Length: 149
Image (cartoon, rainbow, N blue to C red; front, top):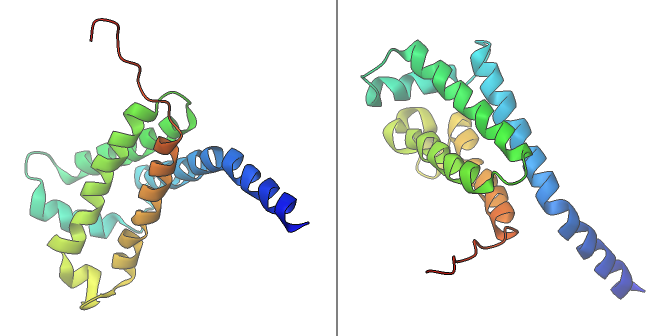
């Protein structure tokens, strides 16, 4: 009795993993990017603090809009089957940028060693985003070698 139920649940999970991960990543990236574009993001202060320590070749407003559009683009690409080889590297570039405050702004992201602030928790949860992207990548078919290679 439990065996068939277990197999059915595992089969259901295998069928739902990629679509649910894609949709979840779309919602997170598009929504958070849209909030930035609309000037309503609670992360704006954190982004500005990081910007002042790292970017000097463009204005914050331009950078913030480009960063917001980049997030929206990542979200949209996760909805489009076949864009995995483009969007997953973009996601990892984004993750590299979003993890930077943990090291460059410790006064904002940590209240004590191994005790993150709310902002730090917001960043650390990105590990679940990385796991979702890796689950999508694990279901991709390898690129076939060309005949001459």
